[in-house]
Image (cartoon, one colour):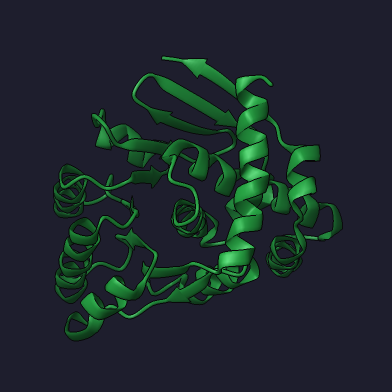
Length: 246
């Protein structure tokens, strides 16, 4: 079995495990996309929670199986909640993802993103502009999503070619990718394999949805349906990935 075939097989197995184990994912998610992300997680049978109240976020983070921290719609209350939740994740060794939304727009947001990344998340997911300004990060999985997703850990890079341009016309598909990665990391300890599985899942579901949609409005609903209906064998049949050494 080639390296890429092993990643594809693992992705199919991980999707089945997410559906079986129903991992709890606590999402410190921007307010624009909370429902979209919650529905997307539920479609693969993960269990989302969304509170950002500082007085209870530690309890929710402790009960979760993984955590995703999204820096959209950031304010001081959310900064406090993020620091509290990520401290719990580090304390009990739960996987957690940083999504540095628009860190390329705001110096203060970039500084906060770098503070979080320095504390050792399981991975960082962003678009090309966000990941470029973040720069090199030793020992942290970097996940650049776009027309072709690139996942890099140390000297290993995986490229995922599945997906569809309509994803860029629906607000929140990137944010959902970060949450799905957290869900897959809850069942697969290999970070690179888990993130690859999550992106194959969303990319293949997007391709299936796009075949039936007439535009971004219908695509959004069909994408959720495709996530819910996706089978491990669909990943095996449709995955398009490549592997490169750094």
